[in-house]
Amino acid sequence: MLLDHPHVALARTLWTAVADGDAAVIRLLVSDDVVWRSVGNNPRAGEYRGPAGVLDYLASAGESVDRLQSTLEAIYVGEDGAIVWYHVDARRGRKSLSTDFVLRLRVRESRVIEALVVPVDQRKNDAFWK
Image 1 (cartoon, one colour):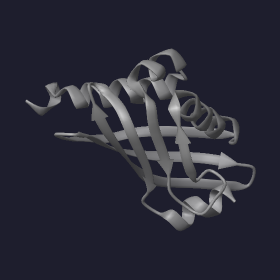
Image 2 (image 1 turned 180 degrees about the vertical axis):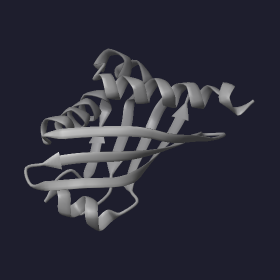
Image 3 (image 1 turned 90 degrees about the vertical axis):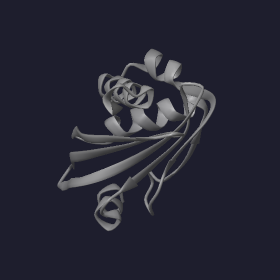
Image 4 (image 1 turned 180 degrees about the horizontal axis):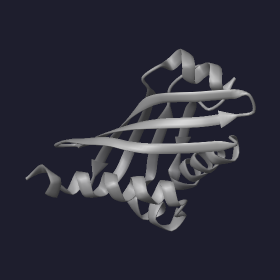
């Protein structure tokens, strides 16, 4: 059954660790040479390398907003990783964001080696972060 697939467990554990701000678990789940990319034309977009870079990126998202709530919608798995579909509601001052995101995780030896964050509505996401 796919619910028992190791990539589902990895994605769920990573999701929970990010939501809880559990840096120790995140460090265990990502490789030492992990590359985390966030697409877009805004200050949050870019490439973050290594566990420290990923942790800084994740922490800065929470610190940059007045409110941030993410809801896990689905996890899809393949041979080399998982796709995490989630919804974000956020507020920064008078700006608000409500959109879905896709997080593509590439996995090797039970650790994330690459992540790609793509908002479903890129224009809305860019406007929120500018």
